[in-house]
Image 1 (cartoon, one colour):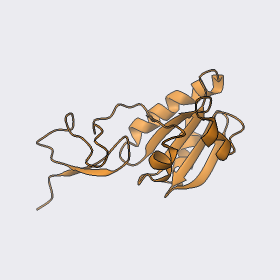
Image 2 (cartoon, one colour):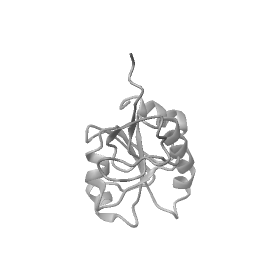
Image 3 (cartoon, one colour):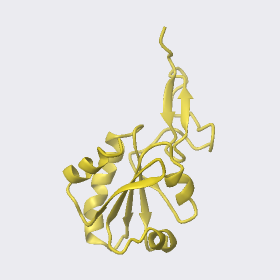
Length: 146
């Protein structure tokens, strides 16, 4: 007999949670960090303070968008990242980091142009795209980590 429980990744920390479908996702909380498991399509916001925990320690592959609100090409890539976050939910952690608000991590990652998309698997950077790329190119890079 198959297990009726579902494994749901936490959108905040990436921990895998066992969910009883009879109880529903809307009220469920992560057993590790306590965040609600129901998730909007929006990518996770990452800061200098939680980069290590949310990105490098994520059990899921990570697509990290380094951007700034004043950057036109960043505003072009943003909706693509949101669509990919929804499409690959449960298999990928999509995240965004505002480089103006988080200069330490951007400097440590040697980000000199935005938008920069970083692809992580197992806490290691696997690929990097600099500039505004079409969805097809981003999905080709995602194939390396999924």
